[in-house]
Amino acid sequence: MLVIEGLAKQYPTGDRALKGVSLTVPKGQIMALIGPSGAGKSTLIRCVNRLVEPTAGRVTLDGQPITGLSRRGLRQARRKMGMIFQEFALVERLTVMENVLSGRLGYVGFWRSWFRRFPEADVAAAFALLDRVGLAGFEDKRADALSGGQRQRVGIARALLQHPSLLLVDEPTASLDPKTSRQIMRLLQELCRERGLAAIINIHDVALAQMFAERIVGLRSGEIVYDGPPDDVSADILTRIYGEEDWSQTIRLPDEDGEPEMPHADAGAVNRERLAGLT
Amino acid sequence: MPVSVRSGTKVWQRRDRNTQLAVWFGWLVATALVVLSWEVISERTMWMFVEDAHIQAADLLGRMVPPRWSYMDRLWQPLWDTLNIATLGTLIAIVLGVPLAFLAARNTTPSVLFVRPLALLVIVASRSINSLIWALLLVSIIGPGVLAGVIAIALRSVGFIGKLLYEALEEIDEGAVEAIESTGASRPQVIGYAMVPQVAPAFAGISVFRWDINIRESTVLGLVGAGGIGLQLEASISQLAWREASVIFLVILVTVLASEWLSARIRHAII
Image (cartoon, rainbow over all chains, first blue to last red):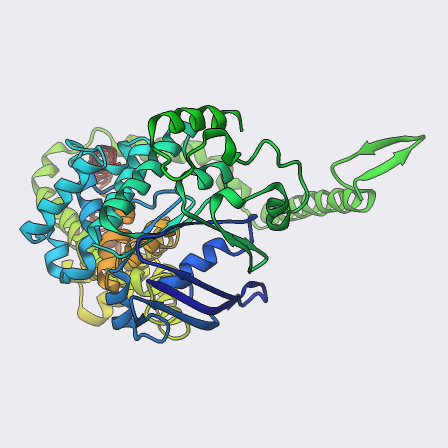
């Protein structure tokens, strides 16, 4: 369980990206974080694993305080938080296998990692994960030879190889086409359910967020302005998060598919595919 | 104010009036300076020497041909020395320059405030002195010979490799660095996994390019006594043995051509 209390971040430029955000993400919950560009979504998830150092507030993961950890302690804590990026953030010149295995760097010493001598169990787990994300046989390809969707799958496999209890996902679909976006979101959702993983997913696409998340948090200028189930997101709420606009085409109407709980049940999924295609 | 309103329509110009005038004035000053410099040079040139330059050149060329090919027998050893000076100098420069680059790059230096300026100073010092001058200094410090040449080449190349490599380091994609950091990797692992692969092609290109430059530079180091084929050139010219000098010129030409061809091939293969 992730607990965030009064998290604030002021950049040296004076920008206050976060103004005291408090949030609890229980084990296994998939939470979508929506909000306009510059609202502090990226800052928020980067403050959780302290890629960005928060100015004030506390972050606790599974009872362990993250804020206040020493560098060494932080490195160990980061192993429990897998991160997935918009631009995939793979090391382009390394192979798929090397990229996936880099998820184990927090567990392996420098020389072992330098000579690529990872423990057999790690390599076996990497093969299994590549298989799971649909990239079996891609081990020896270089990351820059892959398509966007394939790269994001490698990014997901890398994060999962850490055996995390939390996924921090920063705009996973912003560089992908609509169909691939959906496949990636579905994959993330399935993997979280299989492994009981919690996830914070920053996402711009409200319909996708509604489709795949169990909870939606809206962030505006560094403050939480909405926190609730996806089906309660209305035009009013989107106006509160993003500002005035005609929202009628953006959101999924909960009544139309009847069963909002299981998004990958067939009839509902088809209906939603059609609906989301319109947006 | 490049946008102005003239008789009701908006007009856009690249520069406003004052900037345009300043640009014209700049051109005027530049032209005046060129004319003035030409006059000064012209005054201090003894034109009678220049007037028969083509006769002198033809005369020199006449004394150079035919090249005395038998002289080649005595050039193999100096040529081998020259190649060794360039190669060993480059290797030493790589060994010293790579750590220097990591100390100098903003995103890898242990301290932006103290270590980085120091590393940059070393790089600038090395780069600001030509290898011929390094050789001149070293010949008087450690005596004439190949060793002085190797060290001169190395000292000059450290800065070159250090500078280009640290610039490459500063331009890498930070996204991959962030990703590797977020896995809980240690600092050395972040460098090894996220940074080294990104600068590897640049590193290979820089090293081969510098080796290629060093071949050319090491051919003249002998002029100041730092070993290699330049030593022979010096001797031949001072003895007015122009038919030997022309052999040396041709040997240098072929060597440089070969090294350029080789380095182009290697760079092509890497990138």
